Image (cartoon, rainbow, N blue to C red):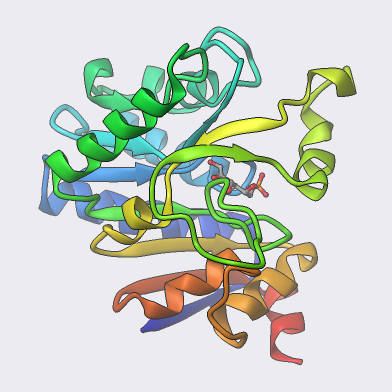
Length: 245
Ligand code: F6R
């Protein structure tokens, strides 16, 4: 079931999302949070940091598992997802760094790294809440659109031209844009007890349509969420206006 929460703008979406995550952490202090990077959740992280600083929101018992990481970028590289999480969120709250998990983009054994990540997800019993953004092409994590099947396991994903083009805004030199990422697969993602997916901007309307109206197909990976019983979509007017048509 997908519950639709329509909001006027990015700021309202971020506040709403942060409230839901904060409620989860207050109710279950040792929650396992599934987290995403990218532009979409930045406002949510800002608000969670504010709640930590001003309202004492406590992350000391929380565990986090991120969806993905670029291959070949160390955590010290500003474009890596480890760097993003540390600088935008983890370093600003009282989380135990040892309980923040992100695939190791510098691993020399990708297969073992992927296998360990899936074992970790199983060990933790899946995530309590999974925060998601969506790519313009409908990808979630780096499960890119395919003609044939959903990928179940954590895997090395080849980014599509569209994803690399969208990501190019973060890289000075196009040659530096990673072609590959380690991405959680659909089994790990769908093991979450509930989803919080945020969609904002007219450029995401097609992906939103795929989530709400399209058929469930690996050609639009986000559509798999139609099969999950507990999904909250927070969508801004500019994206929703086009989904409706
Ligand atoms: C990031 C991730 C990606 C992004 C998606 C949208 O961890 O898994 O699937 O959620 O590419 O990115 P933004 O939010 O930058 O539009």
